[in-house]
Image (cartoon, rainbow, N blue to C red; front, top):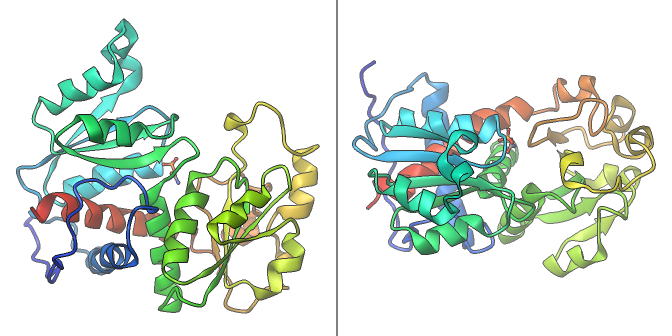
Length: 318
Ligand code: CP
């Protein structure tokens, strides 16, 4: 396939980033810049332009120590669509099993001529640790419950596409806030761009300390439904819980599952998002997940565009 041309416009002088580790550390201008470039890539994808040579000669590696469907594959697709080589590292079959340290492993992979390392790990701070020890760019693809910056960006891009703005929107993050890196990245990004954010779920998963980040807390989805513009439904992360934080899944679903009965009490323009994977019937019923208010698969398409923008801004703009 021939490489397509694309006009990505100027990159302002304030953009100096080598790594993308958190949305906490980005300014509103930097977040808007990524969203603007991602919108251009999204338009190109929609028009069927799939192959560019913007990162020809660059090499990226996926270094994932936790499972992934969306993030891992969309980073691979994004890198390849930009013309970069993509190396896929498999932790379970690597020499980590022989006692090699994480930093030694990463340094050896980098020595093969890697320009960007995309890292997912269960321990918060792992991408930062690697960024401090490597010369290549490091992108956080999810570090435990800490942050998942590209997920935050793609969620925010999907909201901006629907409403044309973020400022003034009321966005509710519903579900397992305690274990959610997506919640943290959404909060940092949305607050910087002027949204009002509500975190909602059982009190065992929504500490009042979240208010320190400037968000409202709620334990009743039914109470907040009429005043929200966006519902971002977060998965209950059973794998990160030593004890179940509610009596039964059925009880959770009765109070927090987004179903048609609840949908009828929302604003007509309500936007339903979920970072995925979704537990159908727990956070959201299938008719709502697959219904006209849902942009869940659009989020996935935007994920490719956001990751193209991030890779290009970190590597192509040097
Ligand atoms: N949303 C998300 O991070 O999905 P994956 O775990 O499949 O990458």
